[in-house]
Image: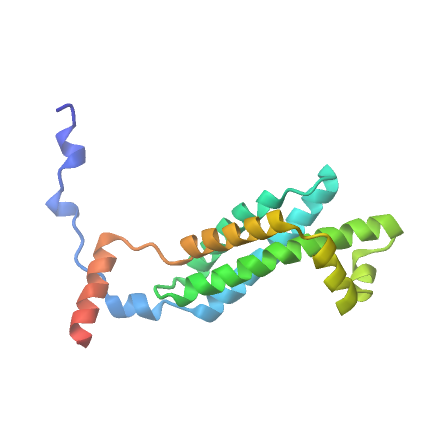
Length: 176
């Protein structure tokens, strides 16, 4: 009743023709998406570790915004349309969640024994990693890591506009 007609009625002059479906498919790159997402994950793990050291407490919920940023990175770098992109983003987000916890442990251990993080990383063995994950990572960390994976998968696929969806549908019709 109180709607403004100009904002809510379609404007035929603004409707775009269907996009080129072949171009949309050609823009996908799983390799570029994986590399960009991996770089963003490393940066976010480093930021999480530094934030935990400056505040002197670990916030496991940080893996959820981390997963969102990893998913957005996959969306931007990979420009993917298939199911491969959310799967790769979820795996990278899961690995980043546990790698962030490990990095916080490395920073904390380095502070405790007065060593650099590189020296602590050089001293890691499979036994110390197993003990770290057995004694430090708790069910809450698993819940947040799983949630971060879901958020990353949600944001990983490319968001299409209406004319791009129509272009992909036309491409599918041609290929039948």
